Amino acid sequence: MIHLSGDLLITTRTGRFGKFNVGNLVTDIGEFSVKDSIIEEYEPGKYAGIFSVSRIYPHSYFAGGRVMVEVRAQLLAINLNEVDVGEPELTASLLTSDQDPLDESAQTARPTLAPPLSAKENVDRNVPLPEDSDMPNDVDPDVVLFGECWPLGSAVKLDASVDRGTLRSQVTRLKALGYQYQPVGQVWHKK
Image 1 (spheres, rainbow, N blue to C red):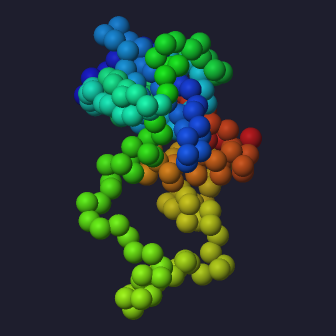
Image 2: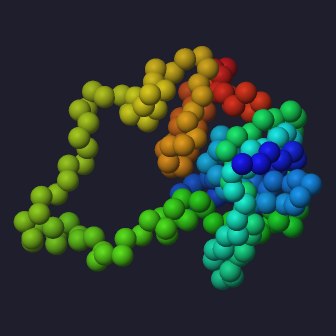
């Protein structure tokens, strides 16, 4: 792991799974794309600080009929000393199309087996269909969404290691409940 000081420019994009954040880490040794879930909680803006990078690697994907190649930095921790929230000035690297990281996860997790059977095919083969939900009707969906973070207090720190879809749902729900994210401490506070 290395520690790099620099600026992280975060923008919000919209994909087929909704809004997602992408970042561009600008350091003395170069510029790197950041697509980690650790930046999902942040508002668009410019964040200056020290960034703990576990890996720098090349990555390619298809977007808009083109192959995009970028150098990514995988962030483990962010220690901020300056925050400028608001849309950052768009540089050439921020103007490119970005693939939703949930799309990337779906592509890497694709099974090599036959496609799943339809509901009719399942019935025809006498395979029981899964229940829509194993949860009783009286279970609060927030309890399920937040897991060990429940019950929520006046300050909430989310676990960025959960899957990105869950983290996005948690962020959306916290905003709806009146919480505001404080990037310097990386904690949600009740307004």
